[in-house]
Structures are given as structure tokens and as C-alpha cells.
Length: 248
Ligand SMILES: NC(=O)c1ccc[n+]([C@@H]2O[C@H](COP(=O)([O-])OP(=O)(O)OC[C@H]3O[C@@H](n4cnc5c(N)ncnc54)[C@H](O)[C@@H]3O)[C@@H](O)[C@H]2O)c1
Image (cartoon, rainbow, N blue to C red):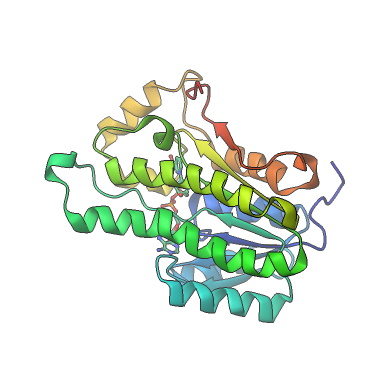
């Protein structure tokens, strides 16, 4: 790779105030990108941006709301003038509940952030990228979107949706110079795990052949590959970061 493979590029990373998104934002900034952190926590977004290289910016947006997303992307274009990279990372895990007891509101809130949010941010980004006939989008799906985890139906379904959305959008923008991919991590050591029953965390960790949790930096490294010019023949695909758990 070049010394600074993302020099001169601008990148929006959603949900980057903490966890995996924060590791992605750090890595993209370290590789030369000017990064915008879009997060539902304004304070978190601003604090995380202040910590990054290359004049990073923190902007508040609830990605499940079209109005928030469209306003935020307008601000990005106004302040940065261009958008080369979108990483759809923001996500919520929801409650640990079997389908028979699941509330409609649990379903709607998880699907609203993880799947609708990915659609809304991608729509805002591609409208800009198509004009410029260039861009890269990577979304953070999950191994649960391939396998379906018990008691996590809204989460698993939303991530299966992200994988299919990736394949669909990639085909639509193939000839516009835009590549669209996603990653499917297994369990990664981040604050998201605080919201999962510890017994389920142990169970899910036991399903990882490498025998440990992944690190946010390991997801960030795969995403760097996918947003860089080292992966120019890769589009419409799901890349596993699963310690050997994914078998297809
Ligand atoms: N941690 C894991 O084991 C794991 C595994 C596979 C996939 N993932 C996925 O990776 C992504 C990041 O997860 P994480 O573990 O870093 O989680 P996290 O809870 O540590 O961080 C999520 C971030 O998203 C932000 N966010 C939440 N709702 C939002 C909204 N409506 N609008 C904007 N921002 C919002 C939060 O404020 C937070 O900064 C998620 O999509 C998650 O599903 C995580």
C-alpha cells in the first residue's frame, strides 16, 4: 500500500463515537482521510473527532431519521466539498428476547437503525457520488445476518438485510464508479457487548474457532482494504471477519 493510501479523500463513518466505528475512523484518519463522525451522540461525535488527525468533524444525526440524515450529509458536502467514502457502521443490538415475546417496538427500533439507517445514509451518499462518478461504500453487517442468532431476531434480520442491500446497491451503481461491499464480523470486543447477556457472549465466543473475541482494529483493517484502491475489483460482496466462524 501507499504510505497514505487515503490522502485527499473524505470519509463519513456513522456511529464512530465509540467501539468499532471509532477504530475505523481512527484508521481512516491515520491513512490520510479527512473523517466525519456521524453519531446520535453529538457530544460523543465531537469528542471523538477532536481526538483524530486531519481536522476531523463530529456531526449529530439519528440515522434512522431521513430528515437528520439528509441534513447531516448536506452539511458534510457544504463543509468538505466532496464525499469519497461512506462506512455504514452505526448499529444497535436490541433486547435479548425470543420471537414469541418480541414487542413490535423492539423490531421497529432495531430495523430502523441497522437497516433503514444504512439505506438512508447510502442514498444520501450515492446521490453525491453518482454526480462525481466515484465513491466507495462499506457497511458493517454481522455473522448473525448469515446464521441467525436465537433471541436476536431483529438484529439478525437487519444484518441479513444489510448484506442483501449491499448486493443490490452494488449492482445499481456498478457503472457509476462506485463500489459497495460489507463486512460480517463475529463477536468483537466493544461496548455493544455490555447490552448482551454475559452467558450469550460466552456462548457466541465459544462458536469462534480462533477462540477469542475480535478486536475493533481488526475490523477497521479489513474496512481500510475495502475503501482503498487495493480492492478495486471487489464489489457487491460480504467479507467475513469472524475468526473462522463463517463457513459460507
Ligand atoms: N461488537 C460486536 O460484536 C459486533 C459484531 C458484529 C457486528 N457489529 C456491528 O458493528 C457496528 C458497531 O458496533 P459496536 O460494537 O462498535 O457498537 P457500539 O454500541 O460500541 O457503538 C455503536 C455506535 O453507534 C451509535 N449509534 C447508535 N444508534 C445510532 C443512531 N440511530 N444514529 C447514529 N448513531 C447511532 C452509538 O452512539 C455508538 O457510538 C454495529 O453495526 C454492530 O451491529 C458489532
